[in-house]
Image (tube, rainbow, N blue to C red; front, side, top):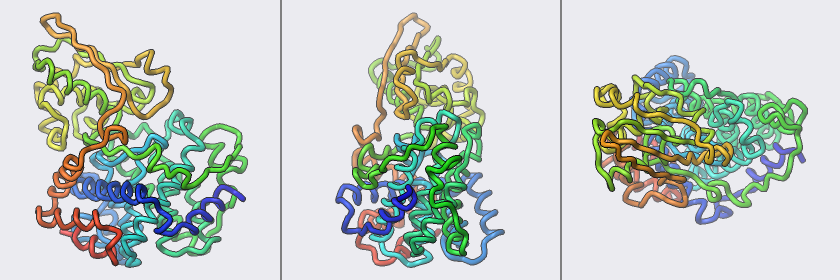
Length: 451
């Protein structure tokens, strides 16, 4: 049995009743978080640009674009809602992929599900199975794929989106197999586009590519059954290793349970989060101002150097990939939330004056940990009065080990969703998503997501 055949067999055999309670509860929280950040991101410039593209090229109105009155073909709805979900870099992350799993799978679930009038149970199953197959595929080629400069979200995302879409559309085994084989050829995305609109496009592209793989397979386009482990196949191309496939043990355990998902507390690259937690803790103990700072040195692990590429940001998009801005924002504004990622906030003269005093570099001890996604950081702050403040953080809040409280989680959703929906609508959406397994038709939710 090939890897793709094994994946299809697993996907087709799973029923909702096979899902552990923990899988269902984590899945619901992931989808709630996704809907919230997508609503918050649907009015950003990159989302508006993609929505215009989708409207121009849509064949028929099959699924909604969140936070708008627009309906487009389901594949372009997946594109649009994937871009919006990643536009603020506020969506969840996975340390298996060192990427963003839900934002590639959930758009396909909602758009295909709306078209097919699926139940909440079907949506949860499609989501859980899609992320499971996507992340187990990723584990075969990580961390090499990320080390080589690939944006893992858009490399692995097509597998998850294709899996979820194939389950919802009802592809038969051979077509399902072809869809995953096509998805292997859709894998793409390079890290050099971080800090630009294209980074957000990567997430929508992955969901769209997964949907397109299903459409093509359903139209009779075939693909290699051994596309993963063949010579010059996915494993070899993305890892550089000779193919030596091992059983992927889908569902044992489920990846969203162990190692789990990270729900973000800050709307920016997760590489800044531990350092931000650290400096906010230092500020609580020893308050100081931007004008008090002589220098800040932050030591990071290997991944931080590759991800946090914008050292003197001028736009909100650039600021989301800047360690320097994250720390400056924490000092100047006392926080790092949605309101800190505006043109006015980023170009505040106090921020501009403080940025050159922040220096990020590899820490020898943290670098020895390897290419990990948890982004541990060490801080050394020298004040003008010669005081030196030091701290470190190995794991930011939002990780499974340090979860957001229920109040923080619901508060994040309400803050995000209220950017486009009135509070009464927000509460209705939140209640419906918390009770997703009781929903008979996903359209009862997607109708609430249209302004």
